[in-house]
Length: 342
Image (cartoon, rainbow, N blue to C red; front, side, top):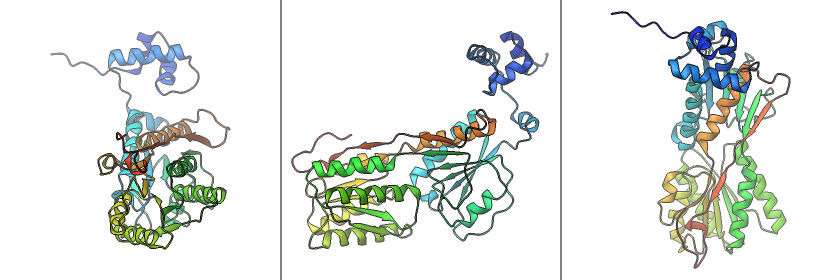
């Protein structure tokens, strides 16, 4: 019985009626071929069942085919980072790349030598010795959210407009009767939380509202969030609306509110800065900002692919914006406004 030989790039080129070089350019999304040629080559590859050999391709390009994704130390406990990581893996697999996930070591221990083509840093923070070590070799870097100014320039950046989403929430609070909004923020700095905090401060200044900001430890999040909520609700002039930033912490806000005889969604409006599936099914359902983490992760890897392929040299850092949405639910509807869940 004859053994069927593997389909080669030349087979694809012959079927598409182009040169081998043009077929290679089309399949790797490089410039130099027309859109029509690209589609014809892809159709031929699909018809023949052609799959490029990533090892051979990486050897020709002097690459490892590996992308390091650097995550915050809390990444293993929060669903947002899991979803973002899966988005990066999905995009990488389509490009024949491998992903190495690297959560920040809690003890700051030096890293072993890492051979990779590029680094994606998600929610980078200032003063991180591990990140400094990763950046030292000069590999291309894409940041998910803003890279602190103390580090070298990045080749690409993916961000979302958290300030606009925070303002939308605060305006919604005001429209539904709240006059004393508060926020509960993580002690650990990140560009994401800092952007929301600054938007909150600006909003309070514009509306003549007193700032009510409580910072909580990410380790021991439950206890610290409960303590922060008690402080905000136990004042003589208590908060009547709360945005809780760290994923999952909003549930502690809701349970603590009952101690003060407050009814969430009526005389206390509550929202989360990070949505999750569970927030749709709580009682009441919880208003939250949908960060679209899987899309965000895909976009980070897509920008890294562009950087490695150098499709638009000399244009400076690539910038992408991933839209985010406020999903309004019962926890912010106000008195007499209960309705269907989003």
